[in-house]
Structures are given as structure tokens and as C-alpha cells.
Length: 454
Ligand code: PMP
Image (tube, rainbow, N blue to C red; front, top):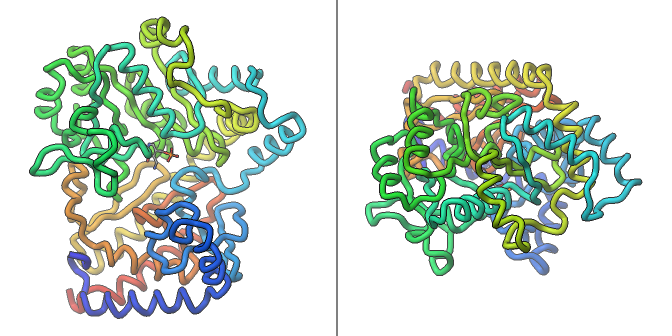
């Protein structure tokens, strides 16, 4: 199950071992730092999951600039991972750096209002169509607070999510569908929140199951990515899906929360604008402050009015002292007014189209039963012949060791993809030459791995 259709299993295991050796041998300082970190960090990594990424020793960054990473062993990489959209605009976009430098002399945190807050929330309203906004520290927090408000407004407890969606380190929605029903997602502690109480899970694009789940009237909100991105593929809504989702949620008194954390490469108003969606709440994080920790949630007039009794009393589980701090908000203002322009998106789209064409040509040449998907400036390939209708179709996972081998083959030669999904993001600072390099290396790697004559 670890190879993938069209790939020669022996060639794969030989290449994977060789690439692991090559990675370790060329990274003595990274390896020494890892050993030092083992004495003060769980698994020797600052976040435990870094230890689960493909390289046997973590990529240990010395600095990042433009859309490039530089490691402590002197290697340089074209970075298509871009911190899973947190660095979507590049690691040192001039507009963001200038804003941050200036703000450093004006105070990092005050717990008061600033003009920048107003400029940001006005601009968010213009882009996403919802009138009222609040600041958080992360996308996870934005989802947590949006769901709390949805429960306050509706008086209902459960949240509906689509199977295999990821909305942050939020146990209450980390649930998956299995033949035994709804269970905690793999790796999520079952002795935490009882997801059978907190969540309902249906497959994306399954309107019958969605209707059955909403009709009993016990779901506070549907929390959804407008296009699913977390299965290592781009999973699009079928024609009419969003209209039906909106109609069903309205008819059953269920709120609709759209999570734009990963889908902003689709356009300057996210998928909400691209697809003409009308959510009750919107959540986001990562990219919003150009890498400074920050998140946001927006809500309709109706939600704001209905939540007033709740939000006017006490601190009821919403907020954080450092949420909306001046550094983050200054960066957000720069991102929204200077970075997220039509020219930025034109550049991202052009490079993503090139990346997609390169991958599609290799898939074609070797007649691999794979496909490549693109959402604006985001591209990923999956080892299924056609795009999946839902993320459940991607399980059980195939090709995990192929993903590792490809990641290592590319990274050993200066190209870094997202270490979890293999997805690639284009930033306004990405060079076309790096996209070209990816295409050439991907072709080489597949030529070395494909079933001969296959
Ligand atoms: N929403 C989605 C769709 C995500 O993919 C993620 C993280 N990958 C989050 C929310 C949470 O972001 P964070 O971990 O920065 O809180």
C-alpha cells in the first residue's frame, strides 16, 4: 500500500534509501542540532509533527527570504511549502517587512484599539462581504470562537464537518467516518472530547447525507472549506453543491461557517468571492498577517445581533490577550492593502499553471493513473486517476513512501514542497526559474521510479 499505481516497488525502495542517505550525509550541522534538541524538545523537534515529515533529519533553517529557504548546512531551496500558506506572500515581502519595522518602534501589544484595526476590518468586509469581525491568534482559534458563537446563537451543540477535513488543532471537529461510525481522527486522543457528541461527519459532495444530518435540527453549524484542500488533493464542490448546502443550512436553521485558511490562493476574496458564497461566518488565519501569528473571524448582521446578549456579558471563552496585537494588525493592513492585489494573483496563477502543465506532461508521458489539481496559486497531485469527489476516497492512503521519496528527491536538489501533503504554493516572490527546476526534477524522479515500459 505504500507504493502507488505505475510505480516500481523495488526502484522506489532503492531510491528512497539513497535519498535518505544523501540527505543525512550533506547535513551534519542539522543532525547535530537535532541531537542537541533531543534533550529539551519532545522528539527533538519544536513541534512534534516535524519529526513525522519525510526527511530523516528536519530541514533546519538558518534564514528565509523571498520564496527561498537557506539551511544551517549551506543549502538553498526554492520553497513551495511556504509554511502551508502562513508564508504565502513570501518570507520577507517588502510591504510586510516595512510595516513591521515601523511598528516595532510603536509598540508590540497594547490591548487597545488602533486605526489599523478599523482599516483591516473595513477591508475584510469589502473583500468577503461580512460586516463584523474579531481578531484571534490563529486560524484554530478563529474556528473555535466561530463555533462557540454558532452554539450561542442556535442553542444547539453539534458541528457538522466533512470527512477528513482539517480545521486546526480543534478536537471537537477532529472526527472521521469509519465503518464503526464517527470516531476521533487518527492521532487525536479519544479520551478528550467525545466527537460522537460534538460532531457529525458526512462526505463532501454528498447532499443526501448532508440533508439527513441537518434535518433533525441539532446541528449549530456546518464548518467547511469551500474547496477541500487537506487530503493532498484539490477536491472541488460539484455543480450545485454550494447552493444546496446554503439552502439546506438555511432551511434547518443551521449556520454556515466557511474556513478560508487554505483557499485564499483561489483569489483576493478567497473562494467566498470566487464562488459567490453567502456564509454566516468566515474564518481565516496563517496568511492574514504575512507570517505574524494571527487569525480572524467575520459574521453577518444576523449573527452579530443574535450573539449580542452573549458577547456583551463577560469574557465567555472568546478572545486572547495578544489577539489583534499592533504588530499583527499592522502586518494585516499591509497584506490586505499592498500585497493581495490583482497583479499578485496574476503572477501566482501564471506560475501555478506552468507547474500544473509540467506535472501533467510527466503523468501523460508515463501514462500514470494520477491527476494534478489546481486552485489558483495552489497545485497538488494525487495518486488517483481522477479528482476525488470527497476526501474519504483518498483513504486508505496510497503512495506514502512515494510521497516521501519525491519530497526527498526534490529537496536534495533544492526544491521543497509541503512536507505533509506534497502540495505546492506560488507566492508573488516565486521565480519562474524555480517552477522550471521543479518540472525538470519531477520528470527525472518519475523516469527513475515508473514501472519500465509502463
Ligand atoms: N483551517 C484549515 C483549513 C487548516 O488547514 C488549518 C491548518 N492547516 C487551520 C484551520 C488551522 O491553522 P493553525 O494551525 O495555524 O491554527
